[in-house]
Amino acid sequence: MFITFALITLLGALGMLLQKNVVVAGLCMVAAFFGVAGLFVLLANPVAAALQIIVYTGAIMVLVLFVIMMLSSHQEESAAVSHPVQRWLSVALLAVLAFGAVKLVFASPGVKTLAVKGAAMPQAMTLQTVGTNLFADHLLGFEVAGLVLLAAMIGAVALTKRNL
Amino acid sequence: MTGMDAIHQILNGGLQGYLVVALLLFFLGLATVLLRRTLLLQFMGVELMLNAANVVLLAFARFRGGDAQAMVFYLFIIAVAACEAAVGLALIIGLYRHRDTTDSDRAASLKQ
Image 1 (tube, rainbow over the protein chains, first blue to last red):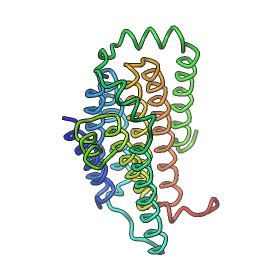
Image 2 (cartoon, each protein chain N blue to C red):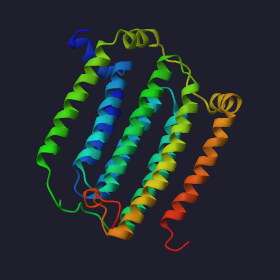
Image 3 (spheres, each protein chain N blue to C red):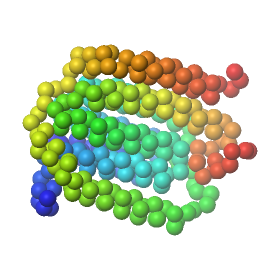
């Protein structure tokens, strides 16, 4: 199961990276988000999986697709100046970084102990546990998050409106 | 850890497997930001990187015995991601109105 969802996620992300058409790239990203939601289910966290589908594949994706349609920029514009050296340099740097990071994960003794110690499946996360934790210990943070969302909403309207 | 052990870990979804998938997702997102020129695609790359961070957070929470604290932070990350999506897309629309482009290379100066 794990490898299936991991492949859906990574192939979706890869499709997004390589796809010429922006709309298709957006749909590839939906696949990647669905894969991540599947990974969350395997992590005994159905609440996070539901939120992932509602917020990312629902809200954010619809927003992105609306903007793509609005701007009618379905294809990537041709480059004004091509930077082949910088592009290949960034690819090489990313490959080295990714290889180093993956090697580090497998070399780390702390990660290994944690993987062995926590191997037993914990109880699935419930909405009740999340709610208790959120409103008992992080009420201020919750209120601030609400305020930040309001500010972002007003900011987005102010930025897109032609004459305020 | 030998190579066979590592492959076994990845295939069966041990902690290392989740971390590797999250890392690869992060680097694919970073590659999208660095290699593509369309601002909308770069924005999607940033979303992918945020998602990779979420995967790592929840993977560690599960291997620490189902820590509920991580879910709270996941909620905050989602809230910030939603703000970022709204404001970022509004900025892209603003740029398109002024410059008639969504190419980040063509938006290299602050003044027109």
